[in-house]
Amino acid sequence: MKPFLRQTLERQLLRLHELDALLSASDVVSDLDRFRALTREHSEASVLADQYNRLTGREADLASADGMLLEAKADPEMAAMAEEEITAAKADIARLDEALQLMLIPKDPDDRRAAFIEIRAGTGGDESALFAGDLFRMYTRFAERSRWQTEIISESAGELGGYKEVVLRIDGPLDAMGVGVYGKLRFESGGHRVQRVPATETQGRIHTSACTVAVLPEPDEAVAIQINPADLRIDTYRASGAGGQHINKTDSAVRITHIPTGIVAECQDDRSQHRNKAKALQVLSARIVEKDRAERAAKDAATRKGLIGSGDRSDRIRTYNFPQGRLTDHRINLTLYKLALIMEGDLGDVVTALQVARGAEQLAELETANNGG
Image (cartoon, rainbow, N blue to C red; front, side):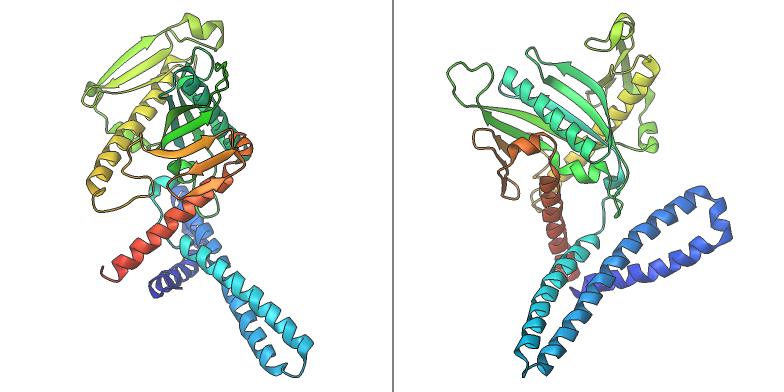
């Protein structure tokens, strides 16, 4: 392990002892917010400590096997056992060390948040809308596998099915290291291209269509409050599409325009105009925050190569080739030949590979900064 990361690890282990003492103090329980924050931090530090203990345990096993090999020169069977253990221990140590390094990378606070996923049909007409529907299904199935909750905020159906545009909110519990829905799905933002024979194609020709996906962290209430009400234009209208007679007979749908930026958000999913307005404000806040983030990223793009480019949503990040059953993520040169499973929500290998690639990039950046470069 690199020295600067070992120093970080040692600080984390010391912090775990401090947290043990803090959580045993009687006054902490009376402050519920502080107690929850300390409990969450303790959980994350405990996972780190457990990983470190497994690493040191395998290092001890390796040292023991090395000693056994030295003593077993006259016993070929014992020597073979020692060599086998040495090989296995070295492989485990390399794997545990890599995982531990990734766990030590500073996390983006937004990674804990719920996420809005916006899917929009692009080039390809009706086929693009159908593909947007397929992506919607893929993400909702992945959410089901992850035991996350999903909620449609707004939708505009395609003429032959699918969606011209759909906005989905996904929320769920944090994992052991405190990563939530946005932290898992943030790298889905970008251009998604599909190559297949459309259902409307009579001559069996393969067409190429595209959709854009934007994943936005749900802002906290403090961010939403910062929007000046005078900068908003709020329109109500009658909802369309599914939802029963009541939703279609009242002006419950809400469209909110942020006048300074021209950003628009709408919600028609709920029967209550009040609740639709609240949801639309959440989406609007997320889009405003993302616009600011993208502008900052664009300024830094000339000096830093990011995993997902400059944040331009038109970047082609992935190709779904149905005739070959192939998915290719162009950012990390990942190719998987299990497209049918992926479209049914088996997205775990892709999500993990993107997180690992980003972690490796962050490690390199941290090492460069630590070395003064």
